[in-house]
Length: 295
Image 1 (tube, helix red, strand yellow):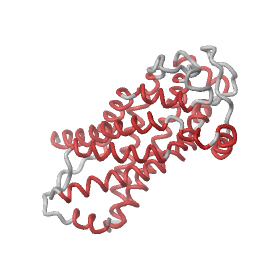
Image 2 (cartoon, rainbow, N blue to C red):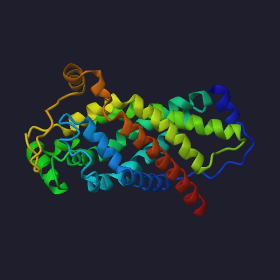
Image 3 (cartoon, rainbow, N blue to C red):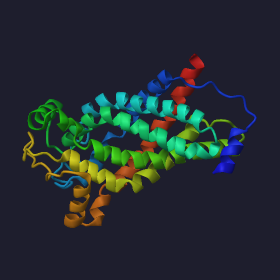
Image 4 (cartoon, helix red, strand yellow):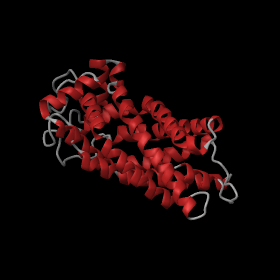
């Protein structure tokens, strides 16, 4: 890694103009919205496969766009928050740790910080989205009112820590791998940066690998978010069994369903994030280039 990083950093190429945080926010918002809208059905199937109630009882292949409104509402601000934090931390940490050997650490710390910040925006909309995806509620307003009435404001952050516990390992795998692949390919082709379509391929591979490895954490997060004390949702569908705590949920799934249940929905998840990583990071890099040229 150190040899590749050093050779990439010493390429005799004129540096490109760096995107500002505002440009990163715009790029992240556009990329996030594109992914969440285009691949929402795969996300729905993944959520239903992970549901304790079972795939068929949670809706099967019907109404795969349930909860899309909530996803769209949280998509742009969540993605923007991630990339603003990620790029800001990466710039700061790179100045503190300029040695190319520290690049993986810088990318992991930056991505982790970005996810922690983004989850403040993303989790409330994720709670509503997943409960609608599994047919606990038929409208966004009904799901919103139920959370307020039964769980209060903190109910919107149910599963926050499990989401962070999933996202940090995911980004610690995906983004260093993504940056490494971009830098390696750019070095091999004697360029400073890769083209957006090349970045898209790197994002797809990195995302798929990270998705498969972190599926058990995603299952735990889904069970916690779907869990509610109210036994029946407005659609009349029985709610999922009540879960509380990351460790206790993990132990309960193992005891009641076995290790295989921790990889429920791994197929749609890997497919969704592989395609999503391609779109998300490809669009993100493209918008950064376009906006930078216009300024």
